[in-house]
Image 1 (cartoon, rainbow, N blue to C red):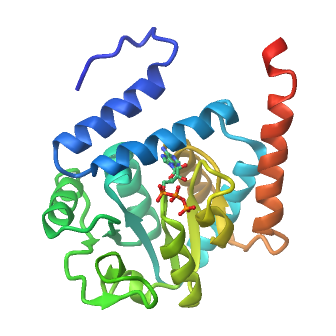
Image 2 (image 1 turned 180 degrees about the horizontal axis):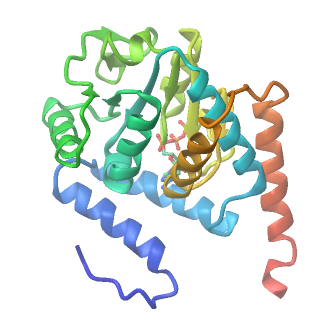
Length: 247
Ligand code: ATP
């Protein structure tokens, strides 16, 4: 990876870019993943590259949902595998949920590369290579999932997901937690719980909250409403942007 000096004001952001580029070079991230990352970066700039209070509340709702799930599964695409390899593996161990390689631009070779990448970093339960079931309503390649994984899961953590698949998973009766910096994406709007935050920050918070919640009795956040939460995120962004140029 290109070496970025830690003193650079955009160090964290540049490091993420390098991780995505390294992911492409390793054959785990698609070239289209670069564009998705750029869209995320733009929203993160507007957000102020920090976790908004409303995002923290969504993260808490997600932690409770994942801990009370019967059969949670964590969906991993090429950007997720490149950006948060260790964190996603830690989360998988913490909640006893398999990781399932689930990519938009599906090729068997890339699925296997991502699976190997996760296993090389210590993951012990990685699905996605069977692809023996289909999400109804999605066209062929993008619909592939594992019967033992996402297909029969009750709660799916699907970060950086696309709107169609999120909608189709909800239509199957599943609860979907997403992590997406765009509060107005179709994914954010369809999901049961949308964490509008950068995936690194969101997973860090999610892991901390899950560790904390595991010490006691876990209760769902009954009064959590995803649409209201998304509106709160948008209001927080607008508040931040008021008079921004004059600061
Ligand atoms: P939708 O279909 O949900 O309306 P989309 O087609 O824009 O949205 P994709 O391009 O499939 O969605 O997915 C990329 C999404 O992931 C974008 O909404 C982008 O904001 C978000 N994203 C990209 N990088 C990150 C990141 N590091 N952390 C969180 N979200 C990210």
